[in-house]
Image (cartoon, rainbow, N blue to C red; front, side, top):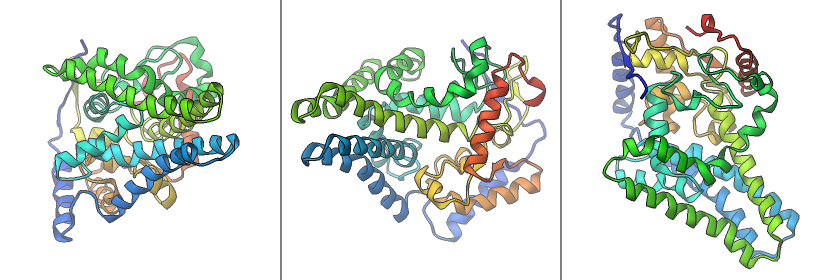
Length: 364
């Protein structure tokens, strides 16, 4: 069992209290809800359409196999869009002040092959609380072929990880739909869903069956295509979705300017939790409206980690408040101006982490 980690505000800083007061005042003064607005509703419709319209085109219209394949590419983009822009906010409780709406839209993850209950444990609890802390944040935990933390176990094959990383990123949602949810149920979901084990497992099975019926079985039954053409389409949509989702999430935490702190012998991180987030989380490409629209504001990752229950369409407005407050308290605000610059930084860090050296001196 992993050592319990506590955040110790040794400097008695009032950074987060001040920041929260200012952000709350922004919503109150402008009479704005922190939840979904018209832009978010439009985005929800857009992302769901991006996923389902190409699916129905494939199923209902007499199109060529080549056009079917192009539709699976769009479906993959839609899957990633739903993940970043719809289910992400809903499962954080940021979409609405009504829990029923958050639950319903959170289950769009189940509809596209994942499991909302598992995701809430991995992401909301483990990742958001213990960001970049090896042994607690599963996103930077040990993988045989990949090393995402300087504190992680080294495998000689990881020397080449910067070259093969993108391929394995592309497998993320494929693994998610087929095996990851069952592995995570055994790993940690049982611990966090005591008293609902049977129901949680039933939901995983039920939604997997629903997903594979409409995404594989119905095309096999009703389309004049071969099984291997269906397989190519299935793999294509998941290669696209997995690549997009993996890269976007990696650029927020696994880049050169992010820190990977470790607790002391007593399990303490000597920083206020919010300041820990400022050291381990990075924004990118905030001036690119297309990226901001598509990735669900995840390029405003700093704002998201500090205010996960605020709908992401508000992040561009509160970003200035976060930057100003950080500057006043001498707290870092980490930012890569461009997407390509952030991607290059990620690849350079993968190259460094592929070496056996732990880089402890560089990670604070």
